[in-house]
Image (cartoon, rainbow, N blue to C red; front, top):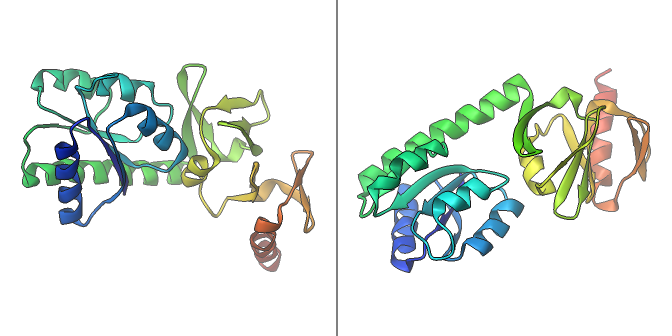
Length: 232
């Protein structure tokens, strides 16, 4: 699991880092003392787990998590136990009160891993993902997705009805999609393999739209589609 840690105390970040290394079960991708930089990173990189302090100078950890568009699993870390109820109201998987011992840390990340595996299996097996649109979470079934288009810091998901404009990066949405069903063909486009109606080296047709294929993805696209042809 990929994780990041946010705390305005460098010593607290060092403790989390040492526990992560000791466990050998997580990959600590980044640490932050600044919530603005942390939010930018989380919204543009795949993050499975967030360790987040609550009492911070610019905004509380509760406010920070609540405002995230793409929410990872959260473990709050704080010296103030009175925030526990609010933390769990944000669906935090656990709440570590400082100073916490390594054994307590292990229990928390075990809960996080179990939830992570459950979510992955549930989404892939049942064939959907959740995205935040119009201030609420919406379920989108993989079978309904016709095309995904990148627009600056947003993606547009076409489903046959009105497209949804979602604040999410292409990298993150690719992490959520089953690799055998979706393929990236351009820095701005992801297409469902079974809805590609025609293709050549430079372009594909999906849902009546002509989509360019960039050189970077040409071989991967050819391999995937050729494999489908061979299976006929």
